[in-house]
Image 1: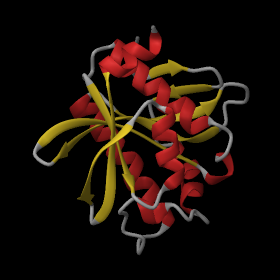
Image 2: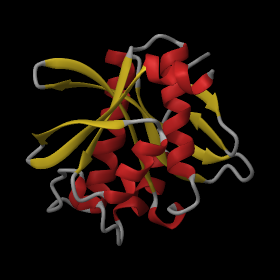
Image 3: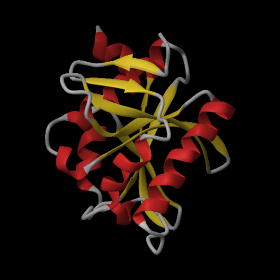
Length: 179
């Protein structure tokens, strides 16, 4: 299955493009969860949106992974992004399942659907034997999603100047879920 062209029950996933920058600006408006991301919030929302999306273009080229645009199947509306992100964490290569939704789409179960889609894709396509999610210790909503994705807290650490829990799930746990 092509990483850059996926679907789940209610969503489609595709490569980001330049046109998505304007839609992504909305993510940075009235979003109380930005503090959990370690971003430089002195930058304009337009700059943050452009830098975030351009970073994904580099990831596509260099790693063959990265955040994808996420759209509602029914309408094609852009609701956010998510994907598998290679990370260096405590001197070890890890693969993070990450997602960010425009706030007006919160509370609809999309985060769980996204996280499970990338977990399943990652295991099925042997991207890694374990996937993690890096979650600020105060971000209870994302911790809930990680648990629904079969993840448990592996350890606590500092990441991008934030105190975070590293959640993880490995293929043996996922295999037990499917049987």
